[in-house]
Structure formats: C-alpha cells, structure tokens
Length: 600
Image (tube, rainbow, N blue to C red; front, side, top):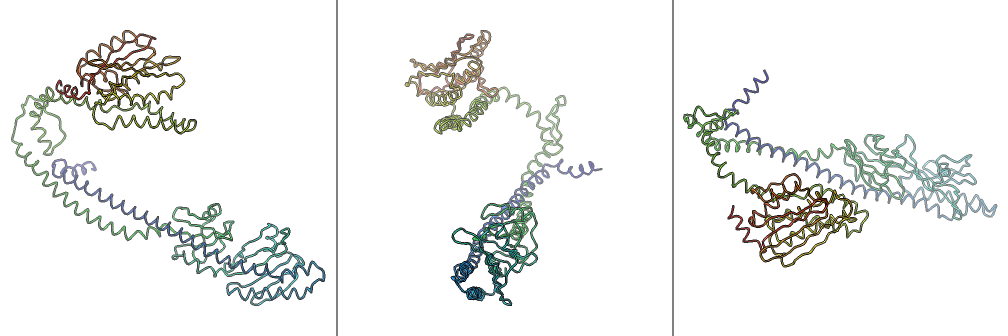
C-alpha cells in the first residue's frame, strides 16, 4: 500500500522533466533561504549572549567596587573605636591596677560606642564591644545600653579567637535581615587577641547597590560566604546546591560559568572576601533575541514564496524547449531494429531523447574514440604529470622530525627545516607551467636533501658539483627530486653502513647532463634490462602510479617537451650503486616547448 502511494506521488516527476526541474529549483532556492534564516537567528542569539555576558561582567565589576566601598565605610566605623584613646585607657586601667579610675574608663567606652551607634545611620542597629579580660561585654542598641560581665566567650567572638581570625561576617541562621561585622582587638606588640568589636547591620543597606545588577524576577542576586553559604538574597528562589558548590570552588576574583539553563556570574567583594553572585536563566537571552528571530522568519517566509514563484517560472521556461523537442521526435525512427538499444530507466522526455538519439551518439563516440580521444588522452596525461604531490610518507616523517626538533634543537635549525618544506610546497603548487629553470629545480632538490640530511645525518653524505652556466636551461618540473627519492627508496634504505649520494651537472655544446649517483644496493640485471627497455620505448603515457612519480614518468615528460634525443639513462650493478643521467637541451627551453607541441 505504501509503495503504491509512493509511486503515485512520484509518477508525475518521473514522466516529466518539467516537473522534475520545477521541484529541483524550488528545493535549491528554498534550502539556502531557510539555512540563512536559521543561521541569522543563531548568530543573533550568540551576539545577544555575548552582549549579556559582557554587560553583566562589567556590572558585576562596578557593583563589587561599590559594595567594597560600603564595607570599607563600616570598617572605618570600627576603626574609630580601635584607635580611640578611651579604649586604650580602659585597657591600661585593667592592667595597671588602680592606676586609673576603672569606672570613669568604662563610662568613656560607653560614650564612645554611643557616639558610633548614633552617627552610623539607620542601617546599624547595634554595637558590641567584648573584652576577654576582664570578660566584659558592652552592648549598645536602640533599646539597650548595658555593660555586663560574661561567664564565657560569646559565640561570635569565640569563633574569632578559636580560628585566629582578625575579621568575620556572620548572618544569623533563619534571619536574612541582618548580619554582624566583627573585628578583633589585638595587642600591638604580639598580636594577642584582647577582644572584639561587632556591628549589627541591616542587609537592606546594600539593596540600592544590588539593584544595579537586578533586572527582574528571573534574575537571582545574592551574596555568598567563603564557605559557599548564601548570606543574603533580596529576592528570587534560592539557588541550587550545585551552583553554590561550584562558586565555593572558584579561585578567580571575577568570572562566570554556564550550567544547563543558567549563566552564573561572580565577583569577589574587597576587602571582606564575600562573593557577589548573579544568576541569569538562558531563557532570558532567548527572549531577548525572539523579536529579531520573528522578524527574520517573516522575511525568510516572504523570500521563500518569491523564490518558489521565480523557480517555477524559470523551470517552466527552461524545460519547455526540451518538452517540445521530445514531442517532435516521437515520430522519428532512425534506430535500426537489429541494433541493441541502451537500457534507460527514464520515462520522461529525456529518456525519449536518449533512445531516439542513441544511434547518432554511437557513431559520434566511435569518431571521438579514433580521433578526439587520442588528443584528450595526451592532454590528460600532461595534466596528470602536473598534479604530482609531495610523498605523504616523506611529509609525515618530516613533520614528526620537526616535532622532535622543537624540543631538542635550536629554533633556527627547526625553522630551516620548516622553510625548506614550505619552499617545496610552493614550488609544487605555485607555478602552473610544467617547465622550470634548472636553477629552480636544483633549489627544490636541495630543500628535499636538507630535510633528508637532517633525518639521516649520522650516515648520509650528500655532495654536488654544479656548472652555473647551465642554470638557465629549462627542465620539466619535479624531474630531479623524484629520481633522488627513488634512490632513497630502492637503493639506500636497504643498504647497511654509510650512504653516499652525489649530483653533478656537466654542460656540453648541445646538451646538459645531470648525473645522480648513489652507493645503494643497485639493480639486478634482469630488472635493469626491463627498465632500460621501457625507457627506450616510450608510448607517450606519463601517468603516475601510487604516491611516487616513477622514473618512466620523468623520462616521458622530457621526451614530450624536448624530443626523443633527450631523456634518461641508467647504469647500475648489484651492491655497487646506481647512476641516473638526465639529458636536456643546452638552451633556455622556450623553443623546445613549442616544438614538442608541434610534434604532438
């Protein structure tokens, strides 16, 4: 049932090239618009995300500075008591044994604390001063003004003494409305803790500053302690324990991290060390980008409709001549009945044209095969030769060697190898011409040998003997380096002991001979005879095989450019090495390039 339905739906497209073209053009026009619209929406969301992150990091920074200034002001209030001469007089009266009137000193302390309380503002709701000796607790608030003897150390000061802290901030459990800022009183000479001063402060004094980063009910703004606990949160639901644990583990002064569905920003408040935290849901960013996304979708929908109309119009106009031609050829019978027809699965106008024109195309193909294909084959061979690549195994070994050199060699030595490899790539792909100067070819070979000398420095000896007068001669690109590469692969790699390789250039009256000698394992007589036979009976093919450019390829290209008088000769004996002689004309090469084309 399903297959029958699919055939019914696809049949109009199978039988009409016009319907196929309309459907294809609609798809080709709609998909880019949909993709661009989706990409634009995503880019808009990302830009909004970047803006929100940047804005919140900046807001957190400045809000942290303002909060730090507020806490510094509270610290200054505490310091007014610490530097008060009345406190020093009271401590001296205790230690001096009747040197001062203790009652007068206590009264002065009470007056000092009252002055601090009434000058601090409405947000400070209480002031305490505890002295370990003689265990006195001064308490000042709106409804209390007491001095009492304490039988033990009160809990907030006990933590101060036991943990040897100079400063703590406590928020009473179950009471988010206030906190205590407690600072120790230390003896100047040995930092012994004599007591502590505590301010009871309403958290609401920070609300105006915290509103700088609060943007609505979806945001969560809070102040956390160094133990990961929530000290104050003016609004919103409590954050998850996962968030608080991650905030506790952060070591950076300021930053943010992302959790599924939330962005968490944090900043350390100096000088108290508390963490200012803002939590923003991911939905906030998506909502901010929704208006732009809606506008993009509307524009995209309009563009899709217009594209569909244009696609239908163009497809109709393009396919109409094909349909007309197919109908006009339905009555033609130019194919003989005895001739085997091609098997075509198409039933539309194209299939009809394919069937009717088969006989004509068959004869054309026969003609192409005898005339045009021969020229095409030769040109394709030339292009194939130009597509020679640097051996991937050589490239892999070179990159591994460079990696090792970065840790063991000087930077200049590593750079020299990288530069040589870069020059090799540039030589292979930069110049589209198949001919190059002998100088450029030698430089390419020297770059290759520099890398090989670095790889096999312990056993490779490389020497050159160059005739500078021959450097302007032309030579097919990638002639010498493949020969030397073959010398390594077939001759030297299997030879124990030291390796020797030399390149010499001899300039004669009409030719330039380049000899490449190695002391490798040599070539067996039967293989050498077969290789010479193939080099002396070239058929014009210059194909490459595998990852290396064969020596037969090099010989073919030399003959293709300069004629049969030039090419490659090989002399070798087992265990005595191999000598390859490349012969090219002693000219600039331009004329020979033209002549080779005429010969073809």
